[in-house]
Amino acid sequence: MLKRYGLISIIISGWVSFALAQSGSELDLERIVITKEKVHLSRSYCVKSSDLEELPVDSPIEALNTLPIDLQSRSPKAAIQADFSLRGSNFQEVLVLLDGQRINDPQTGHHNADIPMTKEDMERVDLLPGVSSAMFGSDSIGGAVNFILKKPDRRKIVFESSGGQNKTWSGLFSASDKIGNLGARLSVENQESAGFYTDTDFKKFTAHFDSCVDVQDGEYNLSFGYQEKEFGAYDFYTPASGYQSKEWTKTYLLDTGLNLEKGGFLIKPNFLWRRHYDKFMLDKTLIRSRYLNHTRTDMFTPNIYLQKDLPFLGKAGMGLEYGEELINGVYLGKHKRNHKSIFIDDAKDLSDKLSFGTSFRADNFSSSESVFTGSASLKYKITPETALRSGVSRSTRIPSFTELYYSDPTTVGNSALANEESMNYQLGFDYKLDRLSFGSTVFYRRAKDFIDWVKSSPGQARWEAQNIDKNESFGIENSFRFEINQTLTFDANYTFVNNRFSKQGYTYKYGPNYAKHLLNSELLIKLPFGTQSFGFTYKKKPVRDGWFLLNARLNYNLNQHSSLFLNATNLCNVGYQEIEGIPSPGRWVEGGVRLDW
Image 1 (cartoon, rainbow, N blue to C red):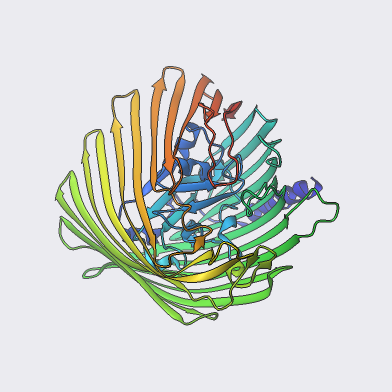
Image 2: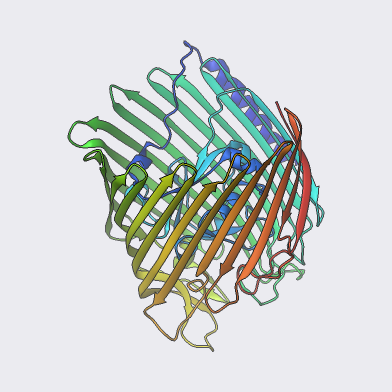
C-alpha cells in the first residue's frame, strides 16, 4: 500500500513540476490522433468512452465483448486476464496498440491485456480486423486493437464506487483540467473480489497520468501508467489438471510524443517504454511450491513518422523505427533482441467514388532474417449510401520468448522456430440509409509456419512449440445497426470462421480454441430517468456446445452530476467454459454510484 501512495505522490509531483515549467501563449489546437490510421479503408469497429457508461463493463477491455472479437477470459473479469482472438486467430496473432504504438508483450500474448489505464482514460477503442496496415509491425495476423487515450482538455472530476456478489468491491477516482496550454489527468482505481469459485479471487490497482501541452504548430503528449494484479489462477495454463495456482503481475508503461503540423507537413517523433513483471506459482497449496517462476521484460520503441499531402500521391507518409526487447526469467533465461524498420504509406482519392490505400514495411530482426510486409485497400462508392471494398495484406509474427525458450515439466519451447507469415484477403459491402446501416465482409487467410503448442501422440508428456506448415481460415463477418427511434437503438455483429490445419493427427493446445460462431448484440433503451441496456452473446467453438449469455445494465440519473447503476452479467446463470477445463462465472450482480462534475 505504501508503494501505491508513493507512486501516486511521484505522479502528482511530476504533474505540478511539469506545469510550473511550462510558459507561453494559449493556443486552441486540435489534437492530431493516430494519423497512420487514415490509410485503412477496410471496415473498422469502435467503442467510445460514452458507451462505457451504458454497458455492464468495468474496463475498456471488457467493452470489446460488444464487437466482433473473441475475448477469451480465464478470470471473472476480462480485465484481470484475457486473450484476444480475431477471425479465428490464436491469442498471439492480434496486434495490440496504445495510441497507434505496439505494446504486445514479448514474453507471451497472455499478458497483452495488462494495459495500465482506466475507463476514464480512454477516448475510444478501434477494432481493425483482417487486412490492416503493415505500418505497426509484428503480430497483426488476425487484425489489430487500438486503445486511444482521452485528451485532458477540460476540468472534470469523477468518483465511482461499486460492490456486489462474491465480496466484489471497486473504487475509481479521476481528475482532469486544462489551464492555459497545459492539460493533465490523474486516474486511480482499485478492484477486489473473493471470486466465484476456488482460486478465482483477485486484486487490481491501476494509476494513470496523462498530459498534453500545446506548442507552436502542434502538441506534446506524455502518458504514464502503472498497474499491479494479484489473482487466483485456477488451471489457467493447465486446463482440467486441478492446480490451484497464483499469479502476480506489474506493468509500467510510458508513452510520449510530439505532433507538429505546418503547411500540410506532419512530423511525429515518439518513444514508448513498457516493463512487465510476472510471478507465477503453479501450486499454491504446497508449503514449498515445486514451480515458481519470476520473469521481467522490457520494451523500448523510439520512432518517427512523417506525412505530407501531395498533389499526385495524396497523403503520403514515411516512418523509421527501432525496437528492443529484453527478458530475464527463472525458466526463460536472459535474452535480448531488436529490430530496425522503415515503413511507408499512401492514401489517395482517385475520384469522387474510388479511394486507394497502401502501405509497405521492411523489418530487420536481429533474431531472424529481414521481413517485408504490406497492404493494399480499395474502396468504391456505388452510391452515397453503398460501397464496395477489397483488401489484401501480408503480415508476420515473430515467436514470443515463451515459445522460444520456455521449459517446465509440462511444456517445452523451441529455439529453432521460424517467423509466422500470412496472406489476408477480403471483400466487403457497406450500406447506410438514414437510421439503418449494414456491413458484410468475406475473408480468407493463409498462414505459413503457423506456431502452436502441440502433442504428436496421446502419450507425449510435454506440449512442444512447433511451426505448422499451413493454416487456412475462411469466414464471413457481418455488422448491423438500427436506430429504431429516439428511444431504441439495436446493434448486432455475427462472425463465422472455419480453420483448417495441414498437419493431421496432432493435438493442438490453442488452435481449435477459436469462436466458430460469434454473435453479439446490444439493445439500448433511453429512459426519462436514464438508460437501460441488454447485451446478448452466443458463442460456439469447434467440437463443443455453444452457450448463450444475457447481460444488462440500468443507469438511474439522480441529477445532472450523480447516478446509480446496476450491472448484471450472465443473468440466466448459464454454465460454460470460455477455455475448456477452466470454469467461468455464473450470474454476477453489482451496483454502485457515480459522481461527476
